[in-house]
Length: 148
Image (cartoon, rainbow, N blue to C red):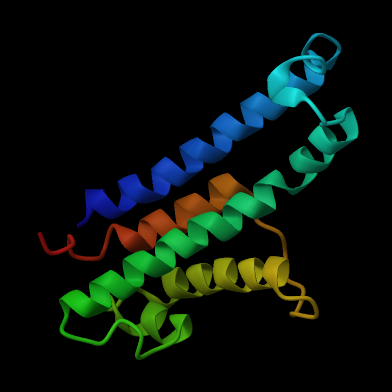
């Protein structure tokens, strides 16, 4: 079980929560902030737009981190990390193979991430950042620790 992999995913979630808190603060106190150097050239509507896309952006980010974890784990097992797509890695990198239900829940995260990134990708039920991190961490904890 790899606490290292889970930590990497939690770190991304922490970044998301920090950005969310910062944007919430900026929107709430915009009347005092808009004239400061850090916010020069920004508008309240841009803050609101950033808020609207924040969770999706970080779901893409955390899945990228997870993909890197999968590729490192495959490399640790002697495989070429660029040899296979993410579908294959989800289904084959962990040893022993995780239950089909867990793999399916990770594939659902992958499909949701794809719907955020690729116009025209199949639409799937939305996932929250918390649920995304939970699913990916449950899978990642089954992987071996990275090589030193």
